[in-house]
Length: 480
Image (cartoon, rainbow, N blue to C red):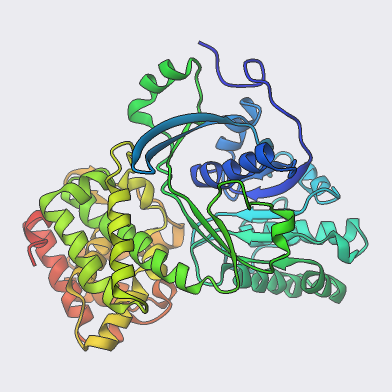
């Protein structure tokens, strides 16, 4: 059986109009698919160049397949189950920043390049003073981006007509504004001439955006079955749900360059995405993040299993309706309806969304998605939301790195992993009590953006839950 590449699929060459930071499942199953739709239904006529925020393995696989991959969309559409697949040919190539950095710099000088998109998780849009302009490449995404924009600024001698439209997809509030802020921080840190900062302000448009599609990724458990159906091997096969929403906060003229109207794409250009963002991040993403450590430690593997489980499922639904929704502004009926839609998407029988795939950078995700709900609940009710507190406790236990005798493959920054490893070792060696462990972790402002031990009763409640999980197991501890 052949592997997917240009030898078995007729790929169309198009101008490289989009630079994408991120080669992962979500961007391929969301942004690159939408570019494909625009190419098929409008005169957009553009392709995507992909660079990696971190390692290079997937970039090499992408190039081995000539940028081609199969997207399998599964779920309900207009009340009917739909299971369809399509080959996405909107990616022109991947650039390995470790071996082909010069290609990256040359891309900055292409007139047709107009859009820059990214999805580097909540931990991605941060300033790292160790990054230098001379690095090949810089360590962090914003450093890489700033170097690219500076190269473009120089290539076109500061021409105000040669700026870019930047649409970050990271799930942080005001992601466009935050990204611009960090780019300007690098410009100052690297002592780049003032004209560059002016060009950033005047020639480039930083849009905040909100994305919504469940993309579990590579279907490892059903791959053999799927390739028999497809008739070829695809090492980048990605599975996603039918539902999608992209809300972009920016000037209306962008619709002329990203012509989504009439294509069937659920992509909206709005003046204020805050209501969309808050609802989606706190209910959908918040539920995902909060359920992950609880359900995984319980012994479950997927979102569908978790929501259908009699105890864990009840825990998730009660958390949404009794602790998350009451903290949100807007119609309670609309929020309840949205929550019902979210839960229905969680139990999509076609989708195998593995909890471990959601667990990447869980600490920063909890901070962005769940901590605001916890703080609002405490402020409004003068008491702790017991399910969110239990989820937080389970998260701290998850970062111990053990599920029974099984090692948990934790995925987070070395700094975060080292902190948890050190504190859990101290506890295991009886150097600190569970209360002291709880206090040491909750007080770490670099993790949470604030000292959580200042919340009345939280340290004690977390320590108590940790002791129960340790002594009884999470199956008993979850019975609040």
